[in-house]
Every structure is written in structure tokens, then in C-alpha cells.
Length: 79
Length: 180
Image 1 (cartoon, each protein chain N blue to C red):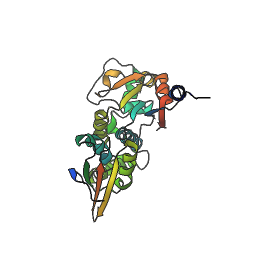
Image 2: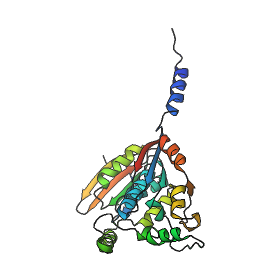
Image 3: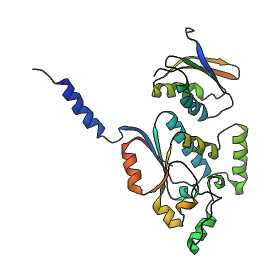
Image 4: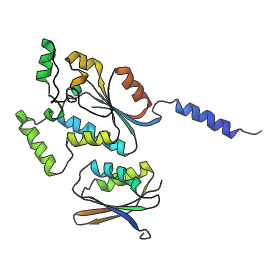
């Protein structure tokens, strides 16, 4: 799973629904197609919201890492 | 026998385009004048815009009062309009909870909690909605009934007064319609 490099890391810690999804939708265009953004969030809803957002928008979640008090989601821009 | 695939596709496409709900769009009627329901409406609206949908909000009845700008004053209203203006919340920050308001204590407590938990306020949600090009319509008839004028409504990049037909034509094209 680790065959990607992170183009950008975004700090969404402390933000609540709907802001993580709103912000990633505004930021996804800031990387090139094929590049990966790491999102750091503390919102447990993001665990289901990011995959739902990615599915709808045609992007991909390449990996999700859960650490105590921190969720890291790796979003790949696909188009 | 050969089938003209291109023609068949074009034919299907033209039929699909005419179907109700074909557009990636959300139309929401906001009738309520309650804080909790406006929060829900704005969270759904900004979330949908983030999901790439066109979003159209149609504020009607009690919802229209929440679009008033408390800094704007309008002169020359008749008695009934003045009564409505006085008795209804002057802007979104005066809305109260539909339950557990407890003479304002519940609403104040909820706002405190939202701040503590970093949940976006209505002010922030309206800013985001503006950034994401969420369209706002205000029901003309409700405004007329309650004596509200366009000049006393909030400054928002895409706000317009309309009637029910405008809302319905958006709703018909939308893949999602909500009513709050």
C-alpha cells in the first residue's frame, strides 16, 4: 500500500462535520492528478465521510491510518 | 441486420436528459425558523456542494426572517409589518432551538458547546456556502406577507427573490430534494 509519495499534508485537526469534507473539496485541485494528499483529522465521521466523498467525486482513498487521537487519511486525486 | 449504436445512444441520452432529477443538484426548502434546523440545512447544503453538487436553497415562511441583516434598517413599514419585524428573529444569530430552548438558556448552552467542539457556526457556514456558490432564493410571497424587503436581507453573492415555480423547476431537475 505504501507505493505513493505525499504531495501535501493538510491539518484538519479539531474541525467538525462538514468542514473536513468541505476543505478537502477545495484543496484537492491544489495537487496534480495522481498525487496524494495526507489529511490529518480528529473527526471520527471523516472515516466514513472521506470514502463517500471520494466515491462521489471520483477520487480514491489509498490508505487510512488510525492512531490514538489522530486519523490520517491519504487521498489520491484521480481526475 | 445492423443496429445504429450511435443513434441509439444519442436517442437514449436525449430521453435521459429530459427525465426529472437528472442533474447533480440538491434543492432544499428551508421553511423552519429554528436554529437547529437551519444548522442542519446549512451543513447539508455545504456538504452537498463539497460533493460536487449544485445547491439551491429556497427560504420560505419562518426561514425568511433568518436571512435578515440586523444592521440594515428599512423605513416606512405599516403596523403589521412592524409587528412581524419585531417579533421574528432579526437574522440567523437570533434563532433559537426548536427544543430545550429554556428561555434562551438552552440555545446559549448549545452555542457554547459548538464553540468548544469547534462545530461551524451559522455565520461560518454561510461564508462557506458563499465560497462554494450555493444559491439562495427567498420566497417573495413570504417576504410580502411579513413585510420584509430585499434591502434588509443579508449581503450574499448569489441571493435572489423568487416564487414557487422557480423552486419547483429547480426541484424537478434535482436528484435530491429536501424540506426542512
